[in-house]
Image (cartoon, rainbow, N blue to C red; front, side, top):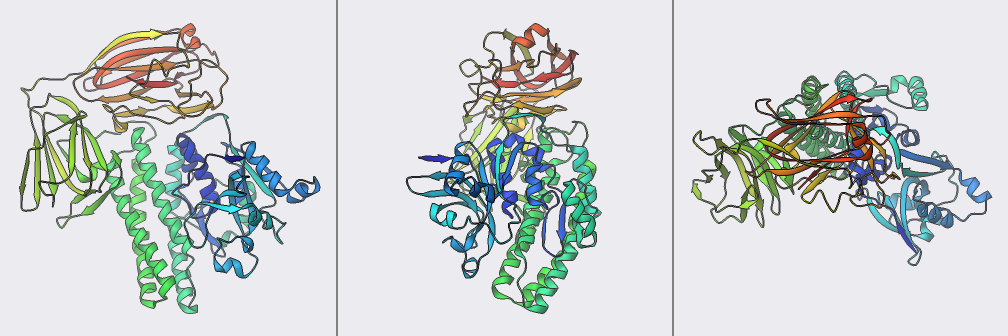
Length: 634
């Protein structure tokens, strides 16, 4: 028999406890905001390690995470009941539980030489097994490799299962993501701003368990927070130089992954309209991330060669990074908004390489400074980037790109013939006489990279105007949760689920403003709940606000598109509401619909034909709030 639970290794993997919870949530990415909101503050315990502040008490951190079902079984109970470790682990996995425990790595062949010289214990996650091949599937670090997926034999794990001399894990932990959540899953901007403030002022952020708090009160002088961690790192490096010792490389990985999380935060806050100057922060954080990556790699180099000059460079770099972070995070904290109002970048007359970062990129895209202080965006081979623009004429400027470059350009998903002009390392591609309105630009590379500098957008007043329009197509009280046959052929957005944006819209063309996401259950036994995209269970969820919220759409091209909104009052709270569609440019109302409690309790689809720059407003008429359970694109 073979059983493997869903497991996708995360990019945040400095420690197993962080890698475990992040990797589980990779299968439910819409839930990540509830976790990442707490990953801004860092804490350094001088006697042990640097870590994210929330994670310091490892087992309490996972136990208290509200989206996780958590159980702990003492090893002695398992032995007392006469259950073999093999049976206990495989039965737990059969029931959907991930098994997280401490094992003796002395018995595991993949372990590094250090672990094979004496009995050392380390935590790992078991998420599957194959009883015919007698192997477990685990997540762990092995032999200096990054945290990843490995196969380890039954014999090795079971030989390592015996009660350790000091089981600081206090037993075997069984973890499962909850199906019945009934909770909000949002970025708490008030809390994010507080954490950024605490970080730059090196103040303890009190978002830890009671158990952890007690320890920090006892050892308060040994804990350092925020940007003051760089002072502790300088002390660590000076000690390493004096004693010819190794640097604790984990600290360098933590500060790098800290920047990865902040980049994700900036992207997500942009998409809910709660960050001003999002591109500005994306560029600065991307540069900081690259600087810290070089800083981390230099630390690895020192541990290999032990050259004093390398250590001196590392020590000199700490104050520079500290000052840069202070300036950036003070600025970022100021520009995070409590209510959605951030501007979008689609109507710029000049779209520069730095503006693309916040847009959709598939594959690899990196910013490189040119000699004039500007930026060039390097789109690697087998990658694509896209952005929305408003205009009629488009001039794309590439650098160091030959006329026979292997790439394709699409406008509104139609392949375009390229009119190329090349001169002294600069290549220009022009497109003219488009209709006046919003368009989607997409460029794809194949076997070579492409260097994008900027594009200029012009608007000819005499051009035919695409315009903005909205018309009611109809309503549907019959389909309820069985949407797949009737809706969403081009794309869908279901709160709490995997999303798929249509090719005429793409992700940056839909901004949700002032709505909270509430997941009721991933296993909702109600025909009104939406059928799953991938799993076998129905999902009940909402976008929700106590009074009103809106969705802003940039529908590109000159064709009106069918967009359907699904409303359902799962709890039968008597929700009544109004949906109003207006021209986002001038605020004029294009159409308006009112719905009563019978329609919302039954589950109703409202279909509209939309074109151009649209705002759809959802306003409560009665009941506790106004909700939306799905958006479907055809």
